[in-house]
Length: 147
Length: 133
Image (cartoon, rainbow over all chains, first blue to last red; front, side, top):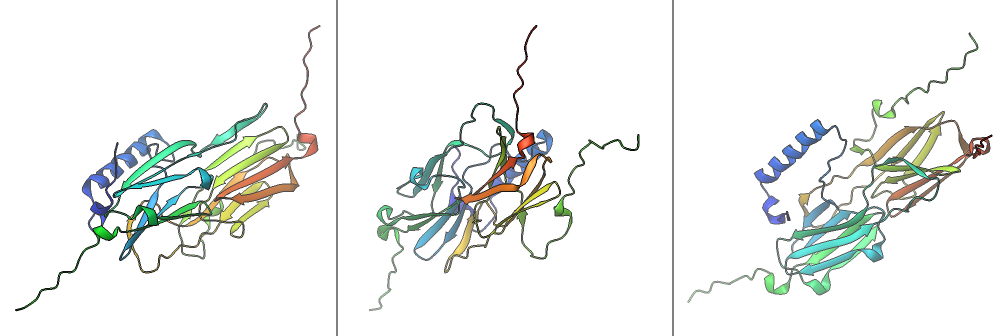
């Protein structure tokens, strides 16, 4: 499974990722579809702070009680399912563009996370997680002594 | 012949052709549209929008849904990785005349707009039984 490594995209543009994006866009042009098929769900954004990282994910229409977030070392996994109401007798779709079903996404973070202190909030369809850096993983300042 | 009714439905003029005053990206929300016996139900994914920022307007036979999203600033942190961009939502649909203009319900929950457009009573489905003789 393709797992994006967040720290790689810190500063410079990742050529592999760019190639993949280009290929996806080209496929889209020729398939005549409006949206990419192999889009990762949910899409995420990340903000890096001094001692933590904030990850936000666009997860509209999901029951927050049914979203599982797990952290092992430096790997964050978000999983859950997006359900649509089944069609009743005599109902039909005019169009169906929203995805549904189970989803799982794993992300590799730039550092190990204090799993017990992870906070997650769900508001207006956006999941926001604050992941503090593990104490043991924090860089230690070494003072240089002169004799 | 001059009394002939024009049954051909014209495509809706897209409101996207005009320019917006707010300099922000606009996205087309993904939508599901379901026809039930007495209504047309529309679901649109608008993460970041709430009941205060979503507007639904019906002018003639053009239904426009818009949703404003405030970009969230993360204080003391810098953008590090991005897959989605934040912007407003806008989408317009041409709807048939059978919708009862006075009975339209809109609910926003968890970033999803659910719009129920009830059909006018005379347009409700009447099942006609076919018999053999």
